[in-house]
Picture 1 (cartoon, rainbow, N blue to C red):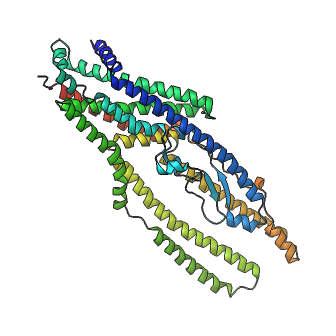
Picture 2: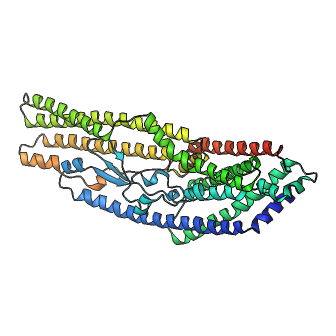
Picture 3: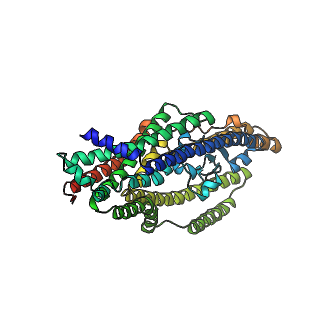
Length: 460
C-alpha cells in the first residue's frame, strides 16, 4: 500500500501545473547559477595569474632592501573552485596576502570580487537552495493534508483499511521524490555544461565535498518539505496552510539569520575604529618620545639605527596586542551569532555547506593562520639578510660601499612563497557535522510532529 500511495503522489505531482513551473525554475535557476558562477571563477583565475606576475615584477623593480621592508611582499591565494557552489566568506576575504616587514600579515577585503555581487548576493547553488528551493518545497506540500481534506479525498482514502502513518509516509516520500528529481537533474546538466565551457577542475577531496554539499542540500530541502506537511496537519483549510507556511518561511529563512548578528553586536561590544586609531597614536607618541630620549645618550649612527628598528618593533608588537584584543571580541560576536542563529535550519544549512566548501569560518581562520606564517617567514628572511650583510660590511671602511651592501635589493626567487593548502575533506566534514546533525534533528522533529498530529486529525 505504501508503494501505491507513493506512485499516486508522484503521478499527481508530475501532472500538475506547479510541477512544470518547478521544473522550469530549477532548470533556469540551478543551471544558470552554475554557469554564472563558473564564468566568474574563470575570470578569477585570470586575475590570479596576472596578479602573481605583477607581484613578481614589483619586487624585482625595488631599488633597495628598505623599500621591500616598507612595502612588504604580496602573494595570491588561488581561487577556490568550490566557491562556485558555496561562496561563503570567499566574497569578503582577500586572495591577496601581504607580508609586512614590521607587523603580522593579515587578510583584507577581496580585490577581485565581482562588483555586481557587492550589490546583490552571489547567486551560487547554496543561495538558490536556501532561498528559492526552500520556498518551493514548502509551497509544494503546504496543502498535502488540508487540501485533500477540503476535496474529500482524504476521507475516502481513510475509509479503506490503510494506517494513517502509511498515508503520511507515502505522501512525504512521493512528494519529496517529485521535488528532488528535477533538482538533481538540473544540477547534473549544469555540471556537464560547466565542465565543457569553464576550467572547473576538482580533485578527489573536491568531488567528495561537492557530493556532501548536495547531500546537505537534499537534507535541507526535506526540512521544509517536512515543515510543510506539519503545517498542513495543523490546519483545516489550504488557504490557512499557505499563510502559515509563508510566515514560517519568512521567519526561518529571512528574519532569524539576518537579525541575529545585530543582536550579537549589541550583546558583545567591540572597540570602534576611532578608538583604535587613538590608541595607535598614543602608543607611537609614547614609544618615539622614549626613543628620542635614549638616542641622546648614543654616539654612533649604527646604534641609533638599531634603536629606531627596536622602537618600531615595540610599536608593532603593542599595536598587534590591541588588534588581537579587538579580533577576540569580533570572534566572540561571530560565535554568539552563529550559536543563536542555528535555531533556523537556514543558518545550519549555510554553515554546513560553507564549511564543506572551505569557505566558512574554519576556512577563513585557516587562511589567516597561513597569512601569519607567511609574514613571519618574510620577517625572518629580512632579519637573517640584515645580519648576514652586517657581517659582510664589518670589514668595509668606505661608507658608500657599506651602504650598498646593506641596502642591496633581494630577488623575488630568494623570498618565501605563500603556499596555501585547503583543509582535507575529513577536516571539512568534521567542521560541518554539527550543523548536518541539526538538519537531521529538524527533519525528525517536523516529521514526528506531523505524525502525532495526523493520528488525531479530523477528516470530517
